[in-house]
Amino acid sequence: MNSLPGLVAFDIDGTLLRSDGSLSNRVRQAVQAVKSRGCAVVLATGRPWKQVAALADELAAVDYCVCLNGATVFQSDGSLFGMSTIPEELKIKGAEIARNRFPDIALAADMADGRHIWDEHFIHDFPSDFEIDPVRVPDALTAVDGPVLTWLLDCKEVDPREVISDLTGLLPDAIEVRPSGLETPEIVKAGVTKGSGLNSVAQKMGINPAESWAFGDGLNDIEMFQWAGRSFAMGNSHPKLLSLADQVVPSHDDDGIAVALEVLLAN
Image (cartoon, one colour):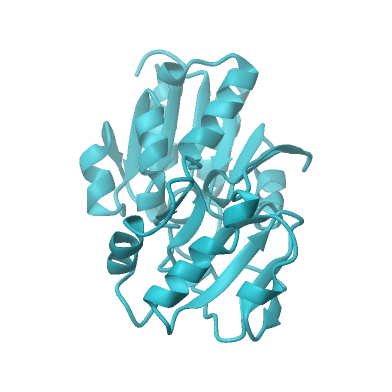
């Protein structure tokens, strides 16, 4: 670790933030130090932009934010850089298939205009610091009235892995189901991932993926790890991500990001 990456990407929950949702001073200082050495800093998360903006301000070192696992990309000032919506002709189809296959499933749509339309019985497992104001409706399928970024599937009565496995063979090719980073799988436009969002940022900035680093902990970080030249899994990561990582660092509660970045800066 004796050369600076061109871009460093950080997942947020379980990676950048501790279990209590706080950002440690040590991690913040390490990220700011890397930024001061000329590295681009990107947050890559399943959160929507409104749940990222305050953290980006607190870090005071962020260039771009890849949100909703790649469905949107924002510059640090909140201006939209890129958006990938579900094809208009399929914006209902995938959720309908999920509902037909699993009748008790509850649905939640992330809309392109920033709204969140949820079934009345949709139960989320979002981090405790989320301040989200959804529109609760009897049936989200009939309430969506514009472009859809993602559908979240509340399938807590069924193993999310089973839902993903079953729906993978049922959905049209232009959309896909994937882990969201929570216990709620999500349906998105095919090919939209944290990796695709980071790639759009890297192209804009003229940075080679091989010169990029990525830090994460969950299944929604797999494509980001595959994209980046070097990947770092937190000690608290999902076993599959641990097996894919180039390096394992201490957990998010033990400032694993700072541990890795401090070594880089020392060299």
